[in-house]
Length: 265
Image (cartoon, rainbow, N blue to C red; front, side, top):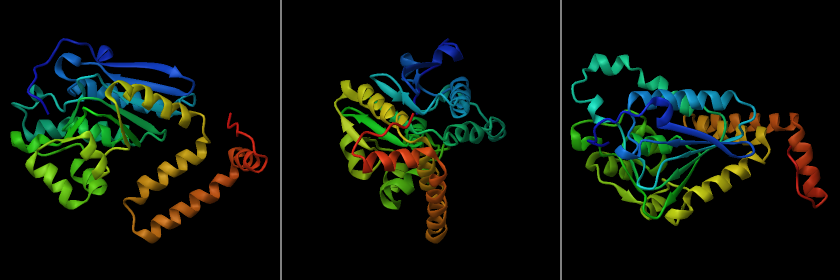
């Protein structure tokens, strides 16, 4: 979270989109003057962009990025100062977060600088997180008399366990990239100036991979986190069987047996 004030950026300018490689959509938060804090307009833009990416068959992977100083420093506190419980409920934040979580395409977060509060929660919606050496992760909501509202009490606990999650949530102190890696909060750490390049390389690799298998893996992992073990195993077996209905399986197995590179189209 941040105490930065609002800027006059338009919703369109606050989130930039491009396609830097075949099958890859890159979304970049673009409010650098206020460390990419999430105001309502940007939250709506993110929800719309992820819903569109999910529906676009030309998009096979998504990169979610920020800027050098901040991936996202959290919520725009100017929108919280005088808000009432009824107003917060009416904003229907869950619907906006769910649009990001529901994306079936693999998402790679490219994190430099601050990923705090809602920014840390946003990063945790990704499937892979590439962090720069200077990145900082944390949930400082308690320091301003609030608590997380974008999933941190649930996602963070599932990622790092109860006691480390409680440390981050109750004390509000951030951790650096190397500690985040040790806790399992990020996938890998690279030099700050290599973050975008590495995230794009991973997304490009995913975009070239067997799409149905990748989607089934994401479905089984995320859904399985909320299921008892036996139900999760049953889901995995069902998804495994369904991969046999797609040409990617035939191509992948044939390529391995023939000792050549697979072409998943």
